[in-house]
Length: 240
Image (tube, rainbow, N blue to C red; front, side):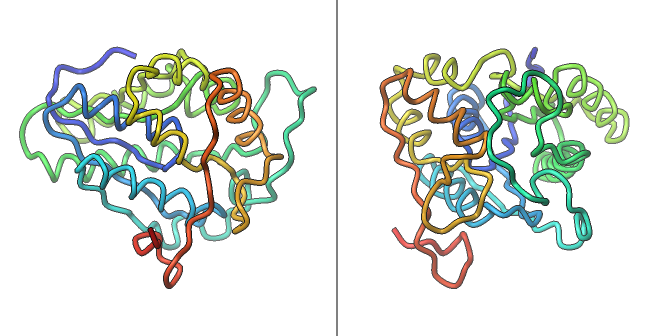
């Protein structure tokens, strides 16, 4: 997607390999970068937000975690419902992990915070949506992101755009695009993609795990994803 003319970027940082890669991309492109993660009751919350925090700190990027409290209470769909194993026979259609409206909420909240951080000037909201996401998640597709950006601009009276540098690339394509950036590759290896919140490590069976494993295998890279050792259950206090 085309980038807005801006030197300010707010990165939506989930802690997954695509968003971690997007943060590295943004740091190399914008002079002012901040990141925002979200706790919305996802089962993999602790692991992915811990990974997000480590990546942001390593790059010297200020990152806040926004707790959405009761925003998704009672919703038992997609990522907040039963996580199913990957179905290799399923082609096209909506991914079972799709949580309707999630990205509309997260991007709108990111825009609110970014406009408060930077009262003047153009702003880019950077997210890690990739081609695999666009195929199974309606709110990761270019048309949706372009439309939502237009709504956000009208609602904020500001020049804000949504930038998804990987939307035309597979996860393997992202690894290939950043193969010369050793720090980015290392953070992607340590990111967390598994939809399940099992504290023994990635489950290996959900779609996120299967697609991730395929990408790393094709790139001949080790996957170093591991569940963090926590203190008090707060992803901001992981050990190590």
